[in-house]
Image (cartoon, rainbow, N blue to C red; front, side, top):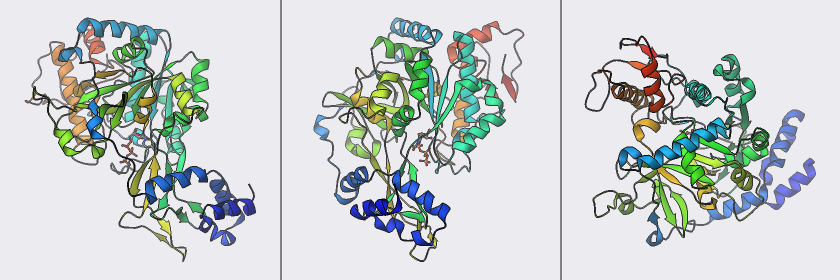
Length: 476
Ligand code: UTP
């Protein structure tokens, strides 16, 4: 679109200020701004502003009708061991058949951690200081060995971290994976607005834009052609996880098996909350659908409500680990059915902006709104969503904050605890404190064992066995 038509369109939508410095820009900057402006869906933006900025409150949930969603208990927590074994075998067959692709969302800005590079490159392991991406790649190498198939790995980045992410993989020779099996694509961007619904200029020639949330992954998978690559390679299931959690079972045959046996389109792992106010989403049922209600949207009395047996009523926490059918991604991601599209949520943020005198102002309090989609909002559209319980110690220890809860230090300790617990399970005598934390700093190479079951069988085969000492990396 040329300048005149775009300006007229922006004028019509009350956003003509976007071009207030246009005449002062050089031709390159003008082209860049026009391209950016042309990429924004102003009708969609009008709706979002109406709902999230102008209206006092978004239509809420009728909490009388909200119930906790049931989930299958883990076999180490009272679940049916035979049923879990059957699921495992089913999942393993799907892996051997090459039906499973791996998908990591890594487009976030990681502001809480405050690390000046893509979060996936952050060093996390206690001895070798391997990065998050390296941990996942090692697990994929382990899975390839176990199931005789190299897995395709899809990594969603954003405009902000794409080039750095790809460079990291190139410099490290694709972390021991085949380059043609690793696929990067960028997620979409959404413009930010101020509290009057006006688009924000972050400089005289560019708009403030931010990634459209992990829920943007569904349309980005579709638009980037990733789902086509999946189809061409016989992949009909995706193992979805976030970039910040090195404990995650990137490939979990039990989970994949339950998903297949349940004829589910999207499944989730539920983690019993550690305490009533834990900041995780809650798996619930509402109007016959499975939904996730964010901790900030669930009143404190419901967060704390107990069942007659004393257990928390709303206990199933959502930790963003899913198995998703590729055709479900296509259905939602293509936007072919307007009834099945993910809603946007608003996040009130401090957004740097360009003042009328062209200086850049970094506000010290929130001045605007960003829009994001959440992947768990796809659950209500899924056929037969299955939820299974997972164990925190084996699947979840994210690196979110620089210090304290969910920090590099808490995650390092959780990795040590997990390694110690596997070694003890294998009969190794190891001193630990009451929380299971070993005195010795050790690491189990995820390429050697991606999960407890694999560790037990690999360790049994290992001869001679290494002496446990500080700095040991068990790698076979
Ligand atoms: P978080 O909600 O922790 O957000 O993302 P974040 O941006 O990484 O971190 P903060 O809030 O700025 O500190 C959870 C997961 O979703 C991905 C992140 O990369 C992470 O794996 N994500 C988040 C995206 O891929 N895109 C987004 O737009 C947002």
